[in-house]
Image 1: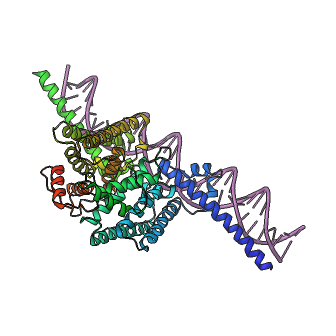
Image 2: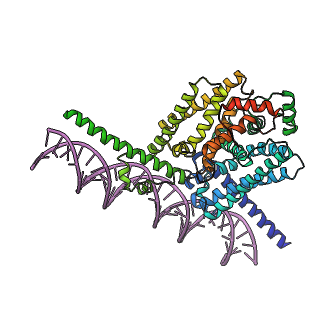
Image 3: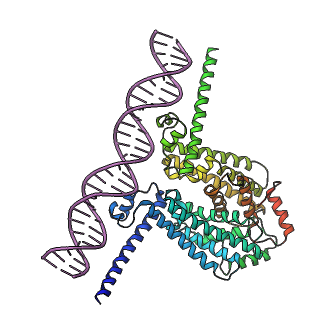
Amino acid sequence: MKKAAWTEALQKRDEQYQLKRQALLQTAARAFNELGFDRASLDDLARRLNVTKPTLYYYIKSKDEILFECQKQAVEHMRLTLDQIRSSDKPALEKLSLFLVRYTELVAEDFGRCLVLSSHKALQPKNRAKMAAARRRLDNDVRNLIAQGIAEGSIAPCNPKLVTSALFGAVNWTAHWYSRDGELTPRAVGEAFLSTFLSGLVPRQAAQTVRKDQKQARGERALRV
Amino acid sequence: MKKAAWTEALQKRDEQYQLKRQALLQTAARAFNELGFDRASLDDLARRLNVTKPTLYYYIKSKDEILFECQKQAVEHMRLTLDQIRSSDKPALEKLSLFLVRYTELVAEDFGRCLVLSSHKALQPKNRAKMAAARRRLDNDVRNLIAQGIAEGSIAPCNPKLVTSALFGAVNWTAHWYSRDGELTPRAVGEAFLSTFLSGLVPRQAAQTVRKDQKQARGERALRV
DNA sequence: ATTGTTACCTACTGGTCGGTAGATAGATCG
DNA sequence: CGATCTATCTACCGACCAGTAGGTAACAAT
């Protein structure tokens, strides 16, 4: 009984700690995205959180650890999303489509933006290596998805490596211009990009057939460009 | 005679000055691209040029002026390229294709990379505004090219704004991964991206017709993916 | 020879920033 | 109550860095 109460109190305290730590990371990510990692000072971050700088060090151990944690959470979120989609039994092209749209949404969030905008050069070598590996793995899985699509015949023959780069590049770059103040939701942007990548700019001859293709590719969702 | 010799000597001196200034900018751009603008110190830059830091101030008046000059030269180069292509009497889709490939090459160069990688946030408000305007104008012109293509029927109906963002995004992002050490030339990357954007990932039904379309779109150049 | 100019230097400043030392108010617990 | 632990503070340090002051050797112009 006594022990139970003790661990309970401990848990509650730890929960508070984690909550505050998370708030710190979120605010930091926003600051990094606004000003850039190097130009966002810890004093400024502390000010945003209504504490003083040394207080931050109760929750984190260095500035680049903050960056690493932000980027880690983003990449873990992406990882989870991709694994979930991959484990479904949908055709490769649809998996790719689903991921692309979801990925666009993640890049529009604080941590996602942070992953894409803040240079990995600021990280310690060890953390930098970890991040690079995780990102390479994501890239590689998407590449394989495309290769599968080609094998299945749902994707036209192409260089999966370069197409993946184009895909990620287009979406990653949204972090530089996308704003929630506009009319577009991140999802709408992702779907528009998807549509462009799927159909291409050159008009399709047999409109009917193309529409069927796209429908299959997109699943049941409605795409507007 | 005397006056002629005088102006001649002056010109020669000025030429030397401009040459050295240009070398400074080029080296700076490389440093910025390697380390990021904020992390590249002027002492480091001076070291690379085998001079001391105060010497730099004989050629430039502040660090952010260096960045501005680098980005300005990049954007001027792009401007010139686009104007040249626009003034030709080719169909809009071909103009777009030509520019996309050339733009990819420019982004692979020192100044182009600098334009795309180094944050405009470091610039003084006045210079930042100038850069933003120049970039917006480029973006707008490409957007109009796409709108023309749609009007001509050579480009499938789409949202020109978003397609332009995807196009620029994919190419801009190459600055993060492209290396001259690999097998690919910047031109090859540009052409592969172009091909992807033109044909789309969904296989074309009537292979014959599609090939004709692509040929028309690409002009006489050979595209490999 | 004198004067001015060019292209560079040595030496320094002022400010910012990441990070630390060490204290303290308040809660927790025996 | 006394002891301990948590969360936060004030005050400071050392490093770095953009930018400046002021000098100087070389060279040219008069």
